[in-house]
Amino acid sequence: MPQLTPQAIIAFIAVLAFLIFIHELGHFLVARACRVKVLTFAIGFGPTVFSRTRGATEYALKAIPLGGYVKMFGEEVDTEMSAGDRSQSFAGKSVWQRMAIVFAGPLFNLLGALVIFCAVFAWGVPVMDSRIGAVVADSPATVAGIRAEDVVVSLAGQPIREWEQIRARVQEVGGTTVEVGVERDGVVRNLAITPVRTTAKNIFGESVDTWQIGIGPKGTTFVQRHNPVDAVVLGAQRTYEVTELTVLGIVKLIQRVIPSDTIGGPILIAQITGQQANEGLLNVLLFVALLSVNLGVLNLLPIPVLDGGHLVFLAAEALLGRPVSVRVREVAQQAGLFALLALMAFAFYNDIMRLFTGG
Image (tube, rainbow, N blue to C red; front, side):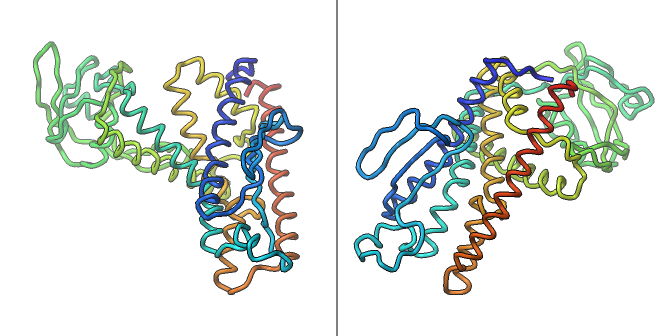
């Protein structure tokens, strides 16, 4: 279990402040683009540590770095507001403009992750090569004559450089007998191999059918860099994959496929942040991108105090042709706040239990 060190806490605060800044920047920029007066742009909650006012906006850093907010002028309808003031108010904008302002926060988190992934792919990432470290006895690989230390150079007509390419290609060919090219002592040998169907656990702990040939990686890596175009394509692909995985994770949690005691809070995130910081800048960047996607997706959940809840109210307004009543929104927000606080308390409980049990 990663340790909660002072360095981990500092790294966690820096990462969290960055993610909150990106999120609130989305709300702020789109609000300004829609000509809404922004009164406050704050990172954190509680007492003000630092603030500066420029134009109509106060930019503030608060003492508790567990959130942030953008306070806009006229967030609720005021019938006594002048026409000039109404034109600068949030409530005075069309429902579509308000939806754009609300959605911009989570969107900027996803865009932030995209930028990080693109930069990482362009910079270069360690990739596991195709050298075999182990061969399972009586497996298709053994029958084919494959040995440990062989390097897979092709499979079913596809050139191979990375270990992940082997896994993907084996799933594609299924139980078909195909040719695998392995390099041994500088000589490439082409061997026939037939994958077998077996059962394995996926990342959610579910049993799934899969195809295997009975080999394990050596674990050696090389740094793979990509040109800008490929980096953008791969960055977009990775952002989509992580987003999809995050949504699936939430669904599996609701379905109780994933145990509830795996939910972590700030303490667990701080521990992992510190661990990633010790392993280098690349690991920190990848972890920040992962957290940014998670923050974006979680904020889109239809819980009234989150952006997703606000979007539900605005969608209802668009359908009904009038705003949802203040009373209904207040009750829903109170219920949503209670649910969110309960979830946070449960996450803190899990964190504390891990600290004491070392789990």
